[in-house]
Amino acid sequence: MAKEQRSIRSAETTELKDRLVGINRVTKVTKGGRTFSFSAIVVVGDENGVVGHGLGKSKEVTTAISKSIDDAKKNLVKVPVINGTIPHKQEARFGGAHVMIKPASSGTGVIAGGAMRAVLESVGITDVLAKSLGSSNPHNVVKATMKALGELRDAKQVANLRGISVQKVFNG
Image (cartoon, rainbow, N blue to C red; front, side, top):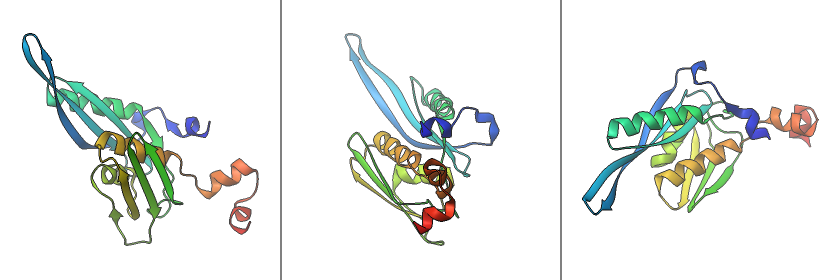
């Protein structure tokens, strides 16, 4: 229910920047020979708390990339970013990929690899410690990272959910 509220439907709100995570060449073997096509995975974000990912498939690389960008703009999610880092530690799994993200102090930078780095930089996180455990398949790592970011809650959301003040969230 909370995830529905945080989804952003319109892509016109801000200027989104796209990052290409990976391109795969796929071969279909038929009676007439081999048919090559491409699949591309892209992450888009405004570097201010909004991020989305998309997958596009086509016979040409450029069309696959443009399809994946269009798909990513349809799957935008709002993520709480506090002083360039995340509010709390979070883990998530998708398929064989298992990711862990932890808040870091100012000046640490984005300590993450490959597909996770693209997602975290697109959302606007500047200081975070991240580890990808399990599968390194870029598709599953991106989806697991998006799942972890989607489960993040800031103090204001927790206070509203519990029906208490923000001070009581910290003081118990």
